Length: 213
Ligand SMILES: *[C@@H]1O[C@H](CO)[C@@H](O)[C@H](O)[C@H]1NC(C)=O
Ligand SMILES: *[C@@H]1O[C@H](CO)[C@@H](O)[C@H](O)[C@H]1NC(C)=O
Ligand SMILES: *[C@@H]1O[C@H](CO)[C@@H](O)[C@H](O)[C@H]1NC(C)=O
Ligand SMILES: *[C@@H]1O[C@H](CO)[C@@H](O)[C@H](O)[C@H]1NC(C)=O
Ligand SMILES: *[C@@H]1O[C@H](CO)[C@@H](O)[C@H](O)[C@H]1NC(C)=O
Image 1 (cartoon, rainbow, N blue to C red):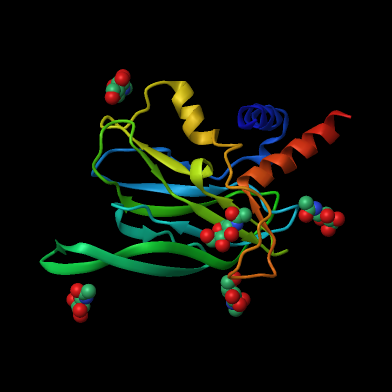
Image 2 (tube, protein in one colour):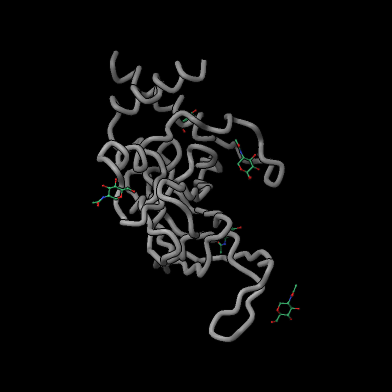
């Protein structure tokens, strides 16, 4: 059942203009245990409505997080304990960034925006996938949870390149159908209707079907 849905969604993606893309990390490749700058790309709003809130969860073992300042957006950081603490420049550091949120800005539906992060990648063998789970909210109260296999991803490679062009395509565009389930209400903000990436796939599929009529 899932496989059928996935194929359908991927077909729908192929038939739909780029406006319906997935949130992705750009570039999608990093070197293990090295610093890099990558950006979380938000490709569209919600049902033609502008995005005004983007929150990225920093994965375990990703440290030295510095978010890109973007004019018109306010950055809010939360931290989590670092256990054991690390010594950085002779100072003990016992917390690390947990989430980076850009809010109070406006990203119109017909445009994309890259939300940049300077980070230090964890160590790991080639092919290790580091997922940056991202949540997006729009002015109409709808949103997307780009989580699970739908999360933007950076793949670690010692030589900084992907194996094959197909892998690059996969890392950039792939996780279309693998959402976390659509439409459950968010207990923290009961008035909001949440659209997961699975709902986005269904929305795209519906749009494509209409476009083919
Ligand atoms: C999209 O917006 C239109 C117009 O505001 C509304 O009629 C429609 O129900 C919305 N669709 C979704 C999926 O929210
Ligand atoms: C973290 O470090 C700060 C200052 O360096 C200190 O005041 C605080 O108690 C430490 N917290 C823990 C949980 O170790
Ligand atoms: C900024 O965004 C937050 C989160 O969406 C919201 O709660 C707050 O009211 C906004 N502040 C202003 C001044 O718009
Ligand atoms: C990068 O490393 C992988 C093995 O991890 C190798 O297959 C690939 O050819 C290398 N790419 C380049 C450009 O050296
Ligand atoms: C989206 O994520 C938030 C925060 O984790 C959660 O409360 C909400 O239920 C999620 N929505 C869906 C549809 O998974």
